[in-house]
Amino acid sequence: MVVRERVGRKRYILFFNKGKSRDEIQKLIKGKAYLAYHSKFFSIVRCRHTEKEKVIEFLKENGFKTVKTSGTIKKLKKQINSFLQDATT
Image (cartoon, rainbow, N blue to C red; front, side):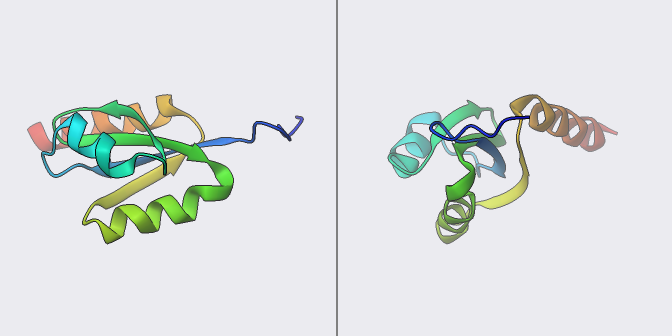
């Protein structure tokens, strides 16, 4: 596997969004990360692998609780589904 030298690898960070709207979160993270997914309870942001720790610290400073970090958005969406299934049972 070849590491992407120019573009870099992506990391997706799953966090509880505390019921904030998509626009509020986009304004908050503008320039730090990209909002890749948003639902009623969870959001996923995308960033470079070199900036992952900075983005996690930024989210924690703004009162969000991070859940998990992954290299694919598909894995995090499965995590969201498992959270929602556990909550209903």
